[in-house]
Length: 479
Image (tube, rainbow, N blue to C red; front, top):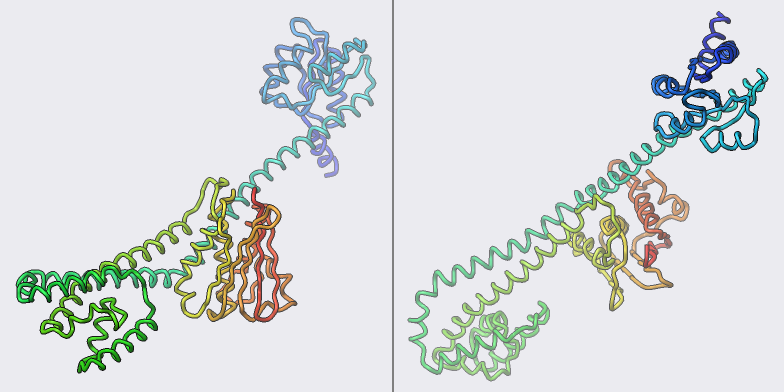
């Protein structure tokens, strides 16, 4: 058993080709190397060597220089010019011993030079040394290739992970986004129904109704509509209630029995001041008819404005969703506005924010674009905003500061939640660390955030005390 094992080990030591035009030298070298366990192929000239080596794929070549037709220098140059043999080490063995010949051998691509008559131990020592070097280099190349493949796979996995986290966050937002789109759609539908009802019920009879009005009543109607159309200021519900109370007092002082109804109609039209001389029409015989017609006509205008506002709101949500969900497969740096990215995320979270969050924005007056990976930075803002809202249980103040500081763009995202306990602050960026219940967090969000910021050559820090937690992201203006 021992002899078989030893023989197997010898066979595996390496594959060597010996090229020499002298048969005695070939046999001698072949016998020496075979006794040491090498697999040996003997070739008598250079031309056969070039064709045979392509098939044999040796680990080492022993090459004579002085050969007919094609000398060793030429053979070595051809070997080094071919892809399959350029990395195979070549040791020259020759009787010529001039320094110039040795230099020429190394210039041709040889790794060593042995002078004839050679010493057996010297040949074996140099063969063993260069085989070890060759195997180490070969192994290193294989490991480098494996590392390259692994790195490519790791990069792809990281990109997929970022995208998965992004889609997971988007999935959590779907219900809120649907509400943010359905609300303006409902307003649009209601407004269109109002406009359609007006035209269906009133347009055909409008000329006849107008003819029943006196010239003075017609002038009052047009003046009232024009006054309403000029109204561009949007009033809050509180301001409308105050105006209505003032109108009621004015109308009751003028002995109108239905002051509440008239005041309500006037506010809807956009007449907010009871002292306006335009209200003199109410004292005429056709006053109530004029007010009713003005209300119906201005309702069409009000419905049209509602449609415009609702369309803009829905378009804003859809644009934010499209911007957020995109994925840059090319991974190129592009110019982007950081504030626009933050606002995109805030738009998507609007349904959660409006329940009880006050957002304070401290932005600079002008914001230049910076080179970055905008879709990945959107993932950063999403994670930080999402964590802030959860930390406050959707009740509190979210403050976002964007400032310039020493050629850096600094973003502070601060929430008024309970804070992060000191004992875990150093762990929050660790992968798979989470304080959320099972199934509600992967523990990868802040780890991904940190990697994205590092990719931008920036840094992220956290400071937390009760009622104030601030995540600070610092990005160089030129990444």
